[in-house]
Length: 102
Image (cartoon, rainbow, N blue to C red):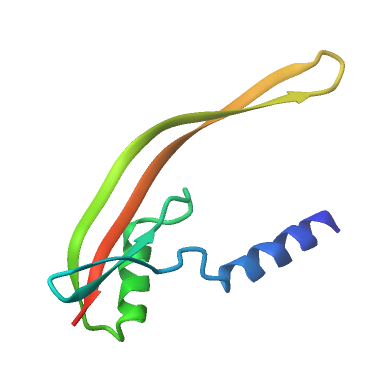
């Protein structure tokens, strides 16, 4: 049952735009927007896709940024006859795209 609930949540989250386009500033008479794709489940192509949707496919890149923000470690204790400590490392990469609509 838990697997079905998890699968349902995963499918529902795929329909939600987790990378909203936001207004950044105005420069040279143009509105500059920014979209961030920082989740480990996204990459820079998701930022490009959101920029394209925001501008109906007609946009110009102002700036892109991909930076390594470090490593996070998730530790878990597995119970049993002898408790076992296990962990996973996740690399945090911050991605952002600044653009303007043509």
